[in-house]
Image (tube, rainbow, N blue to C red; front, side, top):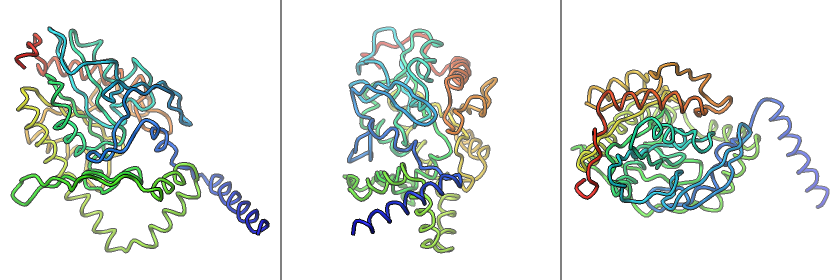
Length: 343
């Protein structure tokens, strides 16, 4: 029995070494934020509050801290200081600052560029538009921002029609009925099972696990189901995303604030159609849209973390300068901060 176990272990080790020699890599970045997240029965997962530590990946090592609200930000209160304007930043790992340390993130840079303005970073790694809408309705509206910035990138569109993220967490799938009304998800969501957690651990630590997973998926998915998936992504994902953004804008404006959508072509899913076509559809529907690619001097290669895709510190700084100028040029913030008691 011992010889059988040792033989199997050596065979798996050899297969793992061969997989890595062939250029395969485990999905390591997906596990790096796991100690900073916890299950949420409504949102799927959320940031853990009052955490401090290091985030280490093959590409970087950064310091990470969260406040009492789970925001990757300094201590803040629900009520604003008199005379201070407030921006609330929603988004995923790009806005959260994956790969950059304190004072290098988009929110920190914006605070330096916009006088008398507080920027709260409420982004959560892996979030998509549906979760950002739910979080704002349940918690974000209490912060009474003057401006809500929603960062959106290419993988948000397919994620809005997905059932699960990170191979482990269930997603709150918001849908629209035929008459355009909102259909709320069935709650509570189920916590990740031990089997899902093991599956994720294998994928994020073993290159061989990813290869086996992809092979099984190819064998079990029929051409018809693959075509159906592409049709859902190509037709429903952009429509649903625009509808979710419209619901968020409606809620934000009812709170006497404004919404700007900051887009990025990073990880754009080509099944969802051309990136520029999606941007034009948002503008046609009256959204304030700031495309990061329009930032003066922005270069996706120079301003991205090599081998990763997230913005580096120079990328955050470049986008912050252009976004601050856009906010001031379009008068998206009040010239003088309103009295919070009357906001």
